[in-house]
Length: 305
Picture 1 (tube, rainbow, N blue to C red):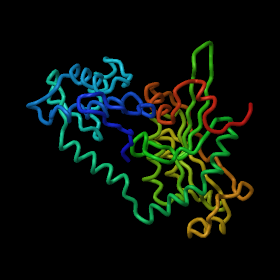
Picture 2: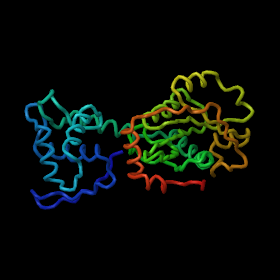
Picture 3: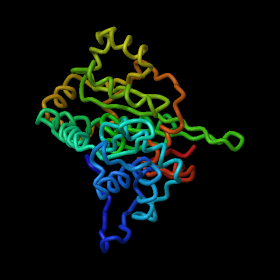
Picture 4: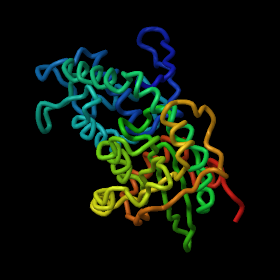
């Protein structure tokens, strides 16, 4: 889904007013650089702009951009490899241009991401019925937590259904523990859906795959589930319910979130802690509109320690 940047055109040649407050630095570079390349008709390898020229024109057009030149230039190189970016480069030190083919690819990706079958829409509605019980489970683990399923601010398969954050201040150094839960209404098709949880490991220290399942059939869960969990270093949470409630969930008769007293959360396999690159965590936190340690302490819901 394309982000709306609330562009307010002024007179020709004057700076353009844009609200950059909800964008991280890579998004700012993508937006401003693509705009500059379009305005300069740089649409082919025969007509390119140097990185420094793109930066200068971007700063002239958007004085409030707030991206240092070196960061801007590094981001341009990153965006050349991004399939959702129209920015392209014919070769090292040969400048940048806006690719019409890349723009078409971006639109095709967006169309694919936004197209949902009725079955997928129903599955997502069923998933939402599990969110509150799993949010409460995270809160019980002493994480600050929130439902983060809406939007695509971190790319395809980039928005966990539920996120928890813990922060620790050790001798002046802030340490983060980010945990995510990817939720499905049942284990049908689990070999495909489990990779949504795997994709979150680029920014999450712990990632869980979760699904509803009849309590009496948990011993019959396939052993391959454990192999996948161990191989990809993720955890598995089972929302255990009785047969009647599971049937109501599957058939759409259940329209309210699952009540705590009728559900058990079983941590079938624990999610091992994995260190991740700080820049990926920073990008993810910015997508949650968290930009400081103070905002972490106020984000989402939490239980007093």
